[in-house]
Image 1: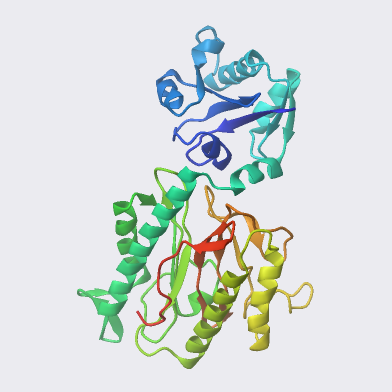
Image 2 (image 1 turned 120 degrees about the vertical axis):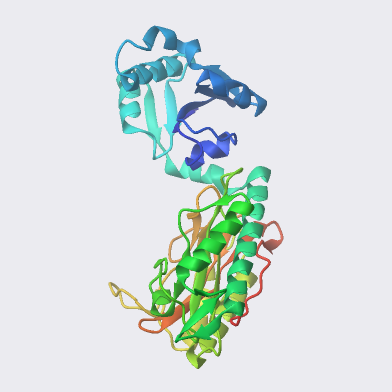
Length: 375
């Protein structure tokens, strides 16, 4: 049986963070041999790794003192990694698809068989462990608190000189993002971006949003922060409208909520993601809207329900399984999103997204937040 090798930093490398839940900023080597987990890491990280139940080896154990200073650090470190792999008697190893090519080449030159296997590592991470589930729940609660902060701004917005203002400031996407970021920080969450889009921007998929928000237009908030402690993500979307919503948006919201409800009914272990997707598409087909299933081959949709239904969430915000035209099933322990939407260029769109844990007897909706269109 092949051993397992991973080399990356585990603060952003999901394969390594899953195996070693102790965050370390610098890349280190993970070796799994005969069921035992080893790490080769700088000496000041050794004790932390041992506390996590990992066999931790300092660089010095594999000859670092003899190598350091004898040439460029990067070259010497490659030699050290080869010596560590040899010292742990690894001759045939499975690695993630992101394994560094330079290191793979050097190991192969030294007689180690290296085989990238994306599916192997995806399968390992599909079923979330207790630490990851707890991190996802924590991130979701913080996301809901951030959504509340945005709704508070929307509720208190008042018309002024043709714009909306809150506490003397113009209500803009940027202002909303700042308030959301403050809440994320208070809950131990981080994010590189978020979607706070308004008007026609809301029909443009991952347009992150910018500028002043007006009354009577769709506002889509899609928030996907990461929990600092566990490295796990949440993902949630709601659509709002300040003031009287247009009839078209009300109809979009009704259909999208119906599609979300239908998908929640269908999520259970063993269900095909494509079948859940198809049932959601039927909601929109019946109302006369196009989807990826009704479009012509080669056609690029810019309206209707033009994206997939959902995806896995964990140490990455987008990971298997996929609820779309792709093959595959959802399984017990998966955490997935369900995010139907309807869009029209020049008008905007509506999307609702919940985070769902697949259980042995169905599913648990991890999202505890209302769907109201009016804040």
